[in-house]
Image 1: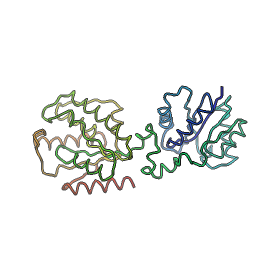
Image 2: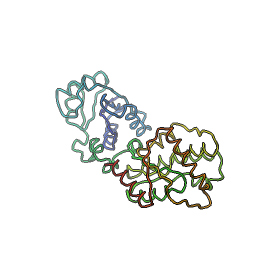
Image 3: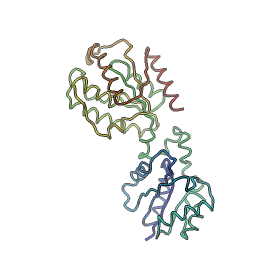
Image 4: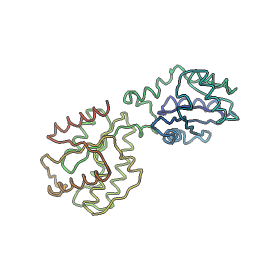
Length: 325
């Protein structure tokens, strides 16, 4: 049996890495992917290993391992150095006894193989098949978003949530912003499940929470890292508190899907429009207080958006632009 390994930081894991692993699988019977994580990096070994595990979940001959190290003890560099390669080769000897092959896209792969007395097979060292690197992705996420596998996108998506009570322009602003940025968007799931704010059940709110979470998970897989989202789980919980006087309990997966980078709260300083399905104006303003209480209790940092419809759009664009620069 030919046992091989590939190694890297996978920060983030991208389609070039995916192609290298697929190539490696054609050269061996069993493959180990070693995720090397230093103590100075801000994405955990668990998350990085999870990206690869999800991508290759149907392969029984792929194993994912992690190696955590201190940069004070081991050099954190990707440069081709015989001295540094010797240090890492000693680590790999302990990690991979009985392995006969290493696959890399770097010139130092020859040094690693030499010190380990195994074979090195190079893959796409000139980046002709996949003109991408983790460094390029980190520098310009928007330009290189297409190189991220689906397993990675949810951790790098930029989610902007529009919050506020009824009749504050969330849906309209969601449309305008998604068109302005040419990005994905998520409308409030409650619109399809609850036809009238004056008549719905507690169980309906559970359906709203699950459906909205599912829509967000789908949206982050789109062609842009930016996603504009109308409403989130905290607003659904606020409705539960306001209408039924009790807490809406949901799983951590729903919270994780709803977690956003930017929370824009639309003030209720605009003319109220009753379309026959909304709460009364008095209740709508009391609901605004409930929303704010729930958001404060959950330590959500809000950016207030106010003024007329055009002013709201301009303020939102300014805050989003400042965030994604």
